[in-house]
Length: 102
Image 1 (cartoon, helix red, strand yellow):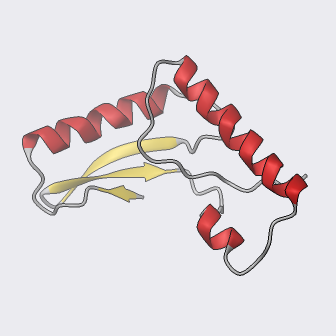
Image 2 (image 1 turned 180 degrees about the vertical axis):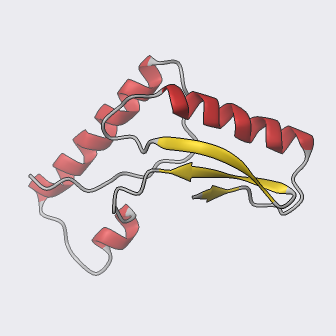
């Protein structure tokens, strides 16, 4: 789930969140998390997202040294997803990659 940071967001924040939801809803890119719905949550909103069981890249690499091949695979996967997002005219603000097992 993705929550707005404020319990009492401004009209502009709510509109931006709804716009983000509409953009994400239209995406059909394998390496981009899917959005299921947006709901009111108290005085705010929440976006219900696919749970693909991933972890953050920061958590994944914490305390380990990546081999060059694995680092390149992660980089290529992220670049591919970003390229597909940009091809649809969307500028990202929040990048989170899921781990693939090769």
